[in-house]
Image 1 (cartoon, rainbow, N blue to C red):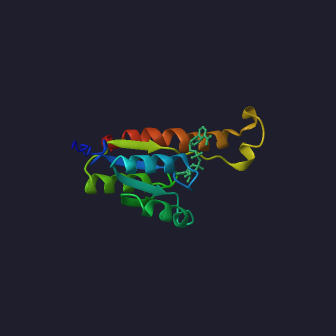
Image 2 (tube, rainbow, N blue to C red):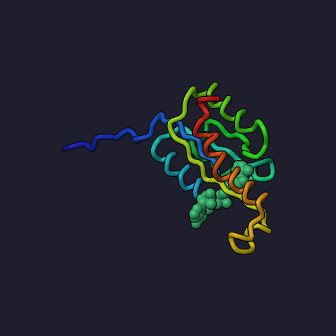
Image 3 (tube, rainbow, N blue to C red):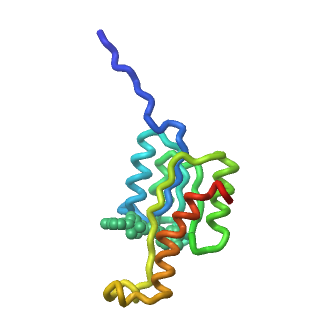
Length: 139
Ligand SMILES: NC(=O)c1ccc[n+]([C@@H]2O[C@H](COP(=O)([O-])OP(=O)(O)OC[C@H]3O[C@@H](n4cnc5c(N)ncnc54)[C@H](O)[C@@H]3O)[C@@H](O)[C@H]2O)c1
């Protein structure tokens, strides 16, 4: 009788940081579940204390080794997170950056109606924070 060979999940031992879970509809939550099934070790962030109780039960059933706050617009929070990742893991294999935000008044009208301040804020959160995360080793 032939026995099926057990396969080690393809991401076993890989270190994955996932930023952008707000609720069970978040794209980042789908990524977290998929990476978890594939064997990765997870670092997962929540926006702030208000968001934490919504995110915590979702990630409790996953292989979450680091669970930390991250608001990229708060000075020092990104640096604190990466310092912890450096200390506890030493390196990262996977980064999921799935965040965006804008002021309500800036998403009511057409694109050209967005204020310069609002555009800068949205770009900082959705774009510049990715550069800061992707280049974390240089810090
Ligand atoms: N859902 C879609 O159809 C769709 C389509 C195209 C692009 N996207 C993009 O995918 C990403 C995720 O969207 P989603 O649908 O999962 O929405 P979502 O609301 O679940 O995710 C957005 C996340 O951004 C986080 N966030 C906002 N401001 C932040 C800050 N200052 N610091 C850290 N985190 C912050 C929120 O906490 C939330 O977890 C966004 O960038 C969105 O623009 C979504």
